[in-house]
Length: 306
Image 1: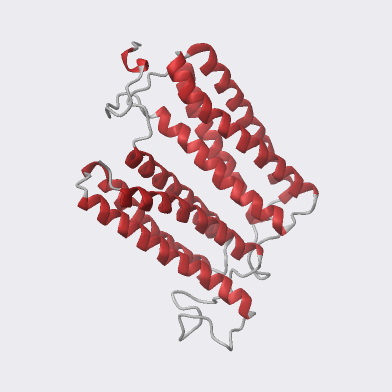
Image 2 (image 1 turned 90 degrees about the horizontal axis):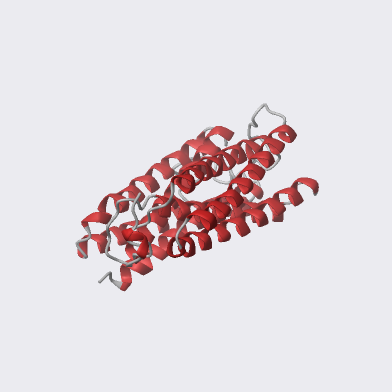
């Protein structure tokens, strides 16, 4: 049996990997990106904010708080790895190690972001690495909880639509970072911006979102028409959850665009981006089940051919 401690640590890891994206967004929205002007120190000669901080004290503490969360995240990943080793789960070791190495890499990338004055390319990379780590943490959690069916034999049309769904989701997130790098919330008034028209990039981003929602609807139809009842029940629920999240996220996106990008809506949109990715990656986990024999849940789909 999987230990309760391992499950709790896995839950916490998904939460903290997601939370650090949101706190990083708060740093940017509040203009606190250079609240700590150097790295790994906050200011030359001090690892914590000082009274003579060149930036406003509140900006320094916001940035410093985000840095502290990285240490919480690392401790979480290390504790989970220890639990994996103690429970002799060899199948989870690589996934646990990926989290530790990824967090360390994120720390270095965060330092590069500060030292380059919040260059939009490094800010975008910082976000995208977090997206990869969230995916890894979610896969690790689902494996620990054994929440996947033992086998899914999806029809080719559904598998192709799932692959297209993942590609479009990644494209939406990637272009979203370009929109951010071209917009007003740079993290600091001195930060460089992409030399692109923000309005044009925003509409490209919106077009990709519309395409993604279209593929999601097509996926729902394909599952309902082509899959067995057992598979339909498993997949439909996750696709429907994604569709609800994506439509809500799209609504927030349009609202913030037409209201001049208020900070509250930008923050909500960032939280929505994390939820879109989590619900999309749950579909990826389902789509990768062909040939896996976990003996967790017995379903009629195991005996299907083709």
